[in-house]
Amino acid sequence: MNSSARERFDELDAARVLGDITEEELREFETLKEAHDFEPDEDLDWIAATVEETYASTEPLSSELVGRLEEQIVEFTEPSRSVVAFPKNVIQWLAGPQLGWAMAACLALAILVVSTLPEKRFDPVAARADLLEETDVTQLAFGPTDEYPEVQGDVVWSDTRQEGYLMLTGLEANDASKSQYQLWIVDPDRDEVPVDGGVFDIRPGRKSMTIPIRAALYVERPVAFVITEEQPGGVVVSKQERVAAIAARS
Amino acid sequence: MESPLQEKPQDGDILLRVAQNDPEAMRTCIENYGGLVAGIVRRYLSSPCDIDDVVQEIFMEIWEKADRYDPGRAKEATFIGLLARRRSIDAVRKLSRQPDLKPLTEEMDLMMTTESSGMGVDRDRVQLAIKTLPARTRELFQMHFQLGMTHPEIAEKTNLPLGTVKTTLRRGLLELRKTIKNTAGKEALS
Image (cartoon, rainbow over all chains, first blue to last red; front, side, top):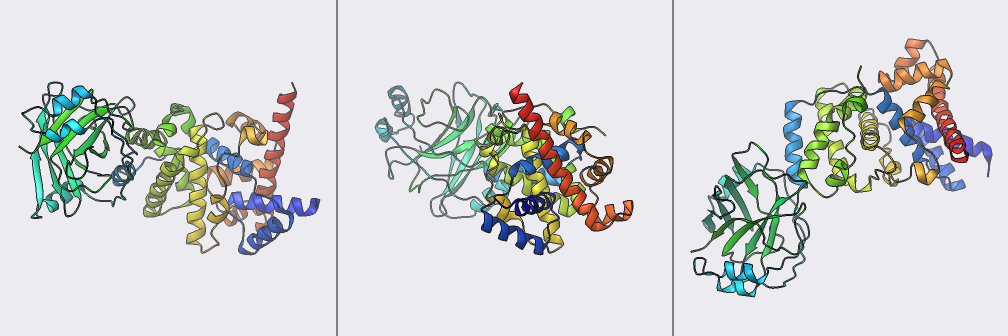
C-alpha cells in the first residue's frame, strides 16, 4: 500500500467528515478511492459525532416545527403487513342476528398479506369534510362494546376514492408500547377475510380524533368496520380478544 | 451550558420502537432528542426557517434509518447526532453550492462502529482523547464543534492562515482516531 496515498486519503476523509472538503479535493478523494480501493472510515464520522455531542447544547423546537413533526409522524405511521384470522367464538359473535353478518362465518384461518399505500401530508379533519361532499360515501355510526362503553363516532368511506376516515370519541388512550388499535374492513363481496385498515393510537387528552383509513387492499363494498386492540404494530393473526368498536350496515 | 446527554434519559429502546413505526416512540424521540438535533443544526445554520426545515429532514431520516441502529454499538444520542451532523453539513454545502457529500455517506451503513472496527467510540474515551491533543488543536476544536464557527471565522479569530485551520482540524480528528484506537487496543489486552 502506498503510505503517502493512504495518508492523503485519510486527510481528505477527515475533510469529508468535517464538511470542508473542496470540489477539487473531492475529485482527488474519489481518484484515490478508486485507484487504491480505499474506503471512507465511518469511525471518523462516529468520533466527530461524539465530539459534537460532547460540546452540544440544546435548543428548544418552535411550536410550528413541533406541529410539522406531528404531521410527519402521521405520514410515517403506516399500517404494518398483516394477516388476520378470526377464531370461532368471534365468528359466532360477528355473525349474530344484531349484525346480520352471514358472511362472517367464513372468516376463519384466513391469511391476507397486504401492502401499504403511500400517504400524502394532509389534514384528516379537512379531508374527511371534503370526502363527505362525494356522492358515493358510506357513513356508518360506531357502536360501543361491553369493554369500551364510551366509544362513539362514525366512519366515512368512499368506494370510488378508496378513501375513508374514522371519527372517534370516548376511545381510551392506549400506551403504544403495550397495545395499539387496529382497524379491520369487512367486505364480503371482495373476500371472505377482512382487510387491514391500519394501526393507530389514541393519545391522552384527545377527546376526538379523526384517523385516516389505510386500506391495504382495494375494498369494493364494505359492510362493517371493526376496531380491535392489538399488540404494538398490529397483529398477524387477530384473536379479536379486545373489540373496541363496530360500525356495520343495518 | 448543559450537555443533552446529562439531562436526557438513556432510553435505549426508543429507536428500536421507532423502527417498528411506533408513533409514540417517534414522539418520545422528538421530546428527548429534539433539543440536541436543533442545537447541532443551529451551529451550522442561522436562518430559523432553514433550521426548522433541516431539523424536520433529520427526523425523517431518523425514522427511515432507525432500523440500522444497534444499541450495543452506540448511544441513541450519538446515532442521532451523527445523522444531524451529516444533514447539517449537507445543508451548509448546498447553500454554499459546494458538491454534495450524500453519495459518499449514503453508501455507509451506520453499522460500522466500535465492535466492527475494534474501536470503542464512546463519550468518555473521546473526552480523554481530546485532552491529549495540543492546546491549539483543542482550541480550534472548541471553536468548530462548540461554537459552530466556520473555518474562515476561526482563521480570522486566531490570525491563523485558513489552510492551517483546515489542516489542524483534519489532523486533530485523525489524531483522535489514533488515540482512541490505541486506548481500545490496550484495554483489550489488559
